[in-house]
Image 1 (cartoon, rainbow, N blue to C red):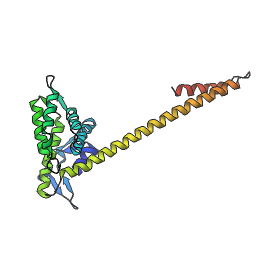
Image 2: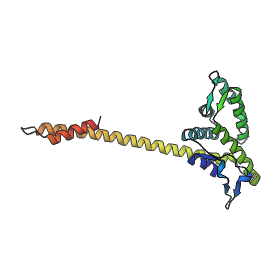
Image 3: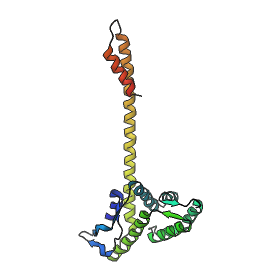
Image 4: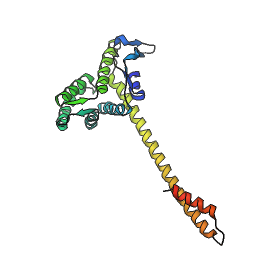
Length: 219
């Protein structure tokens, strides 16, 4: 859980989370040692990798293909359609009969297909997946009941909820701004009426200036 939280919320990960670098804490918690092995992810790449996790958890083939392309750099002569077809061919091998994710199969098939089609996967992505495989093997030596898929599911749900909340916030802000703009326009219109009615020989310069400023702010 700590490993995935680091990736999702802090955009960094431990590259060698083997048993030599894991310490068992109280309440079935684990700690990772040797901070020199940590590697950071830029925000854009971290989000793309999150999409891969989500795609694996919800078994969304199209999202997985798109997300893998997003973390790749293809040669100009590469046929991306053939690369996608090969990834689809191996898709079923990424899961066992209970739909638990077989990360080693996913990594092996994806890395091999990328190499055959002259596609360079992001080094940080490759390093992260490799470290996840090391972590899974290391933890299972300590806790044989450890289930990587359950951990990924939990984090994938958190990511989806966070994105939905952010989307709702953006829509709310946009709606508020539109309402504010309409209110300014209406106020500007009323001010224009007041200044026109007020011109009975005396110039209402102050009101006209306010009305003019409101017009500008609503454009």
